[in-house]
Length: 96
Length: 393
Figure 1 (cartoon, rainbow over the protein chains, first blue to last red):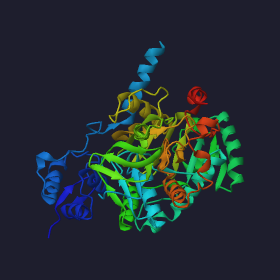
Figure 2 (figure 1 turned 180 degrees about the vertical axis):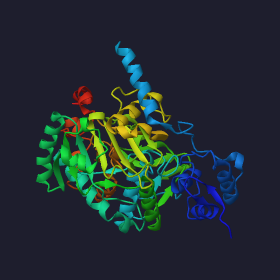
Figure 3 (figure 1 turned 120 degrees about the horizontal axis):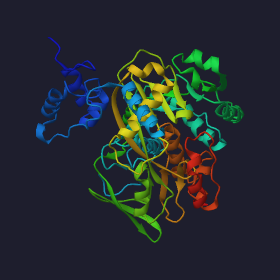
């Protein structure tokens, strides 16, 4: 049977997630932490809807009622250098 | 939830869970752990995951080396892979002054036969070629220090405790502490009242609030830390690294992500869990300075955590003399994760035997009344706190 991919960043299939929920990681936050879903380079942008749907179905809850893990900055991964340089420029300006 | 327990622990973080597990192993099975959210939702799942015993004071070395030894066998003891990696821990010295502090500390570490050695700039650069040579003067390398997976440690203790009949109660917040004639009588929670004669405050950042419920004032304040994690990178950081010069600590995860935090020079009074732009930029600037190659590394996510700190930054461990049956396992600052195996074990020994083990005795609350504060020289940012420390004497 073909694998059903849910999270592309961490390579998680539907089976992986169902197994994790059955093992007791049945809070969306603990499932996130156990599997790494929502925490890869896409930060949930590719997987969130499918994952929440699967989670709601498996735990017998309504998708609207689910807590969604906090979105963390940045929205898109950005090079540290951009942030570092901007800060450095501000500092230089302060000193002038 | 039962109506009464022998011991109730407020706080389902890694310290509270370790204590519950160790109590149950010691034969006390009527134990409950309350958490107002879910176990590990606080600092236990937000910290830097780093482990060492290379400190500079006898008190800290004794306590944390006991813990470090327990990390070695923790996965086996708890029957759960906590991913402890004995990759080594480097305290980087970036200036001659910082190196001279290392020279003082290594003498104390040698007294305890820690597996630490003083390393020069060449040795540091050989170990981590990616470091900016301008910030490399030398350091102390602890060979048996390392990292572990923070969430896994929480789950490991929780599962091991449950197997020994401990009740772990999520979404159960403490509302009030019942004290009768100077003795603990129970705790009111959001899910109802529980009777107990022994109550342990392991509430992390909220420990001061919990003590207030029992009418006890603790010398604690909330201390907020932020961390970042980058997209996975090729292996370049083979050890756990702390860099006092930038007030930073960091490691590379098994997935290759660089995870690190740095304390800003000016701590903001904000104590919430939202990330701040100031801290992000401060960390970006510091990490790019330390590792010039990280200029193009992509920041993936950023988060914050809160802990409690005492004026001397050491934890509060042991009984509260004014209220019989009230105990503290709190105020660990940023060190509660690495101290969790020993913290829980030693506090359990105190509860079971009625006598405080030598490792935790110096960390009693009474030290702030008697002025027997512990001077730990390796703590970042302690100098700025010294004014407050005097106020508590």
